[in-house]
Length: 319
Image (cartoon, rainbow, N blue to C red; front, side, top):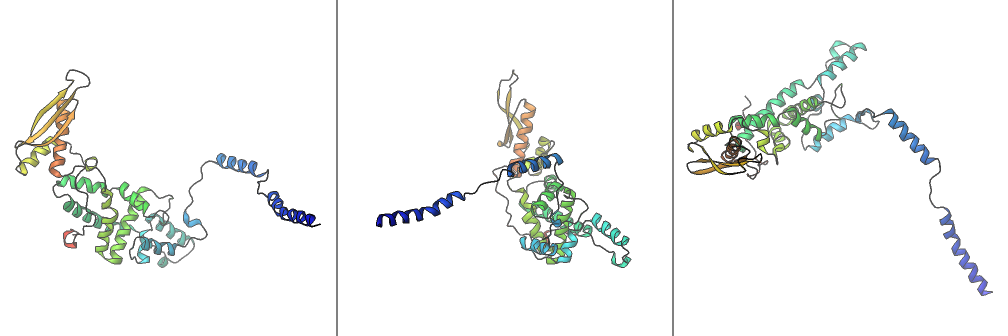
């Protein structure tokens, strides 16, 4: 009798295990063909247009503006920041829509970011030029202008603006916004920051987000002198380094299609630079460029840029 009780207890314990095995998860047979049909319909319709984030139900524009300033650790006046994100085309479209609804002319004034963008562009240009003069004191004005044009170009400003998260906050008639719109918005943000927190904060903003685009950049790719040997001669005369003299250091395969020449540039018996080329002229130009990099301290192994440098307001020409 006791043996029967033990067997009954074992059977009772085994029942939950069997139930668990019977309730294993599985997919219905209609799931796979349904998903394939949906994927086929999506592929047949083609790529869909990108939807702006403002079209979602939980979008709160004022909260997004507040969060934008906090992410940048800056204090903005929200009306100014909203104006910085408003393009002129959108303002005109909004005024026309209100006019069609019969709203009075006095209430149709919608501010756009054109004035803030002009102010921000002026501040950014002044600070970038001052920063380059302090960071690259031996580079001539032509080099400063080329590097400043790169930093203040539409492509660079649009790149910075996109990674700051301005794409979804811009009021524009186009989506996604173009590079020109992104660049203008970033300039307007700089102008809004200057009006909200002062010019000093705008200078630091330009240093932290625009000047830092020079990090790990080869300056020779940004600015390459068109006539390096002539420029080297002028620089050596101006700085009293002596007349530069190219000398042939070596050659290989002179009478073959794989000829290679090595030329060095000397001044006062000091080697300024050397370069290679398939002929003497090309090697001389390469050596002149290498010598200019030495004189201007533009080599890749130069000292990194100091992005913690703070320029005083009197050193930045805003006039």
